[in-house]
Length: 363
Image (cartoon, rainbow, N blue to C red; front, top):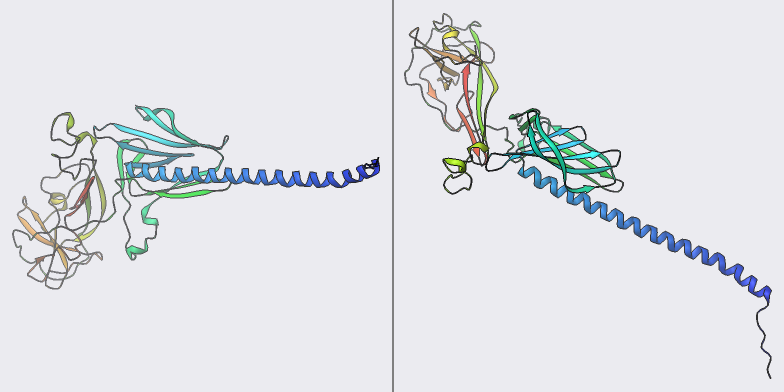
């Protein structure tokens, strides 16, 4: 019978001394790989959540009439086809590092009230900020240096205004970040388009020649505007925009007026027209005031006709940023539509908005 030899105790201990460190090293490598895979999965999920948030913010900005900001908050406002207002917001809680969406169920005297959570909640947000950026402070290379005018449109609620300002939103997690520039659906462009001028009905006599720095007056522009889902649409075929009844949609419109920058006009020496007869005071109406419309003389200088019916006077006042009067060289002619017009009726319209600007002497 053949004898079989086993491992001695010493051999077993040596084998264990070699195998145990290798086993512990393998377990450490395996654990690190599992932790890395878990962290990568979490980072991927966080990036997907931020990408979904960016898509939601873009979509909600396109449906909003106004976007405004608060402390750790981004707010939206719109009206439905029946004219009912709707508010919703994104709020950041720095203590819990969460960004949540809320809607407001009621409208109080000072604005929306009774917010409740609605929609997904984003966790592990390490930073959240919102900044309102006036469009005039943003360089737009495609405009070739043209300065776009800031427009602010009050919507009837404290702290809520529309316009063409951008709201810049920055959201960061430990591994990802989104940076979005949001503009509301009805943001006006800040441009004006000249659509027509007309010649004066009566050709006044030329004022006496000679320069003068006296009788310098200001004029201003009055911009009337209307916003709403029923502006610029075909009432007969657009749901919620009928001409009468509860289906009118007119409650969804917002009307208003704003004063825009004007300039300087100079009356001729010995003018027979007192400014009070022909000016338009702020907050009141003067029945003798008339819209200013520019015309050009033979030398290309711009003038406006000022008629005072009560005094029986009819004069040409020069549009002059330097406050200098020079008698016009007749004949005067209206400024063509395609030519730059220092004073002229302007109109800008599109789906959901229109703006009409006229110019008046300022009291």
